[in-house]
Length: 252
Ligand code: PGA
Image 1 (tube, rainbow, N blue to C red):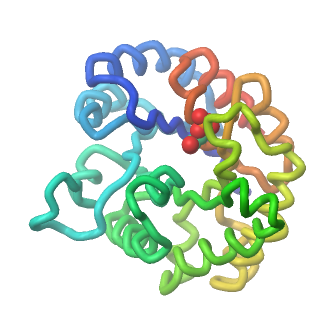
Image 2: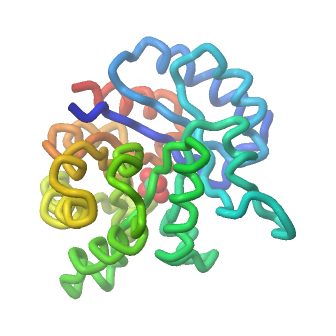
């Protein structure tokens, strides 16, 4: 049984003071929910204060990125150990990182290895552009992202990975993928690529989330699908009532 997981990707939103206010609003609703792993991923500057707030709760904390090197002359970067000081999770390879900050499958691979070595749960994003979708290249793209992004990772470690399928054309657009369409990509492309790397049992045990315009109104449709194990939520994770509704809907 794969435990459902819903993570809120706040992106570049909220000051530290605003983050504390938002988590205070979220906490009563999120505390009561059992059987769903729920995670908030605020910007780096809010991690210490949100970490203090979430102490002794079952709400997890994640970063939105990290560097793969342990330390050194990498101005502006944050190391795995620095993330681990506050977080249990880290989002890696988000399409916005790939698009605006030149991340590649190779750097994602380095980051996934560094996260696993540090005992962090990586939430690794894959997904095709609208052009690739229109050209029927979704399977080829996500297969390449999985095979290259996870190259050299042992099956025993793989089970700690979480994958988020986020078609780029669905992110922040309100143009969400259909639940059936998203499930088909997970079932026919992503799990088979993972099976190629680690075997069928591992591929079946790894959690895969859907992301891209998930809302309080459409979340339940995704969670009904057999291969979708939760969601990576952007815009709606900034609205406390909506995020609580989404997390609640993920309960099996
Ligand atoms: P969205 O973002 O829910 O605002 O579409 C999802 C994401 O980018 O993780």
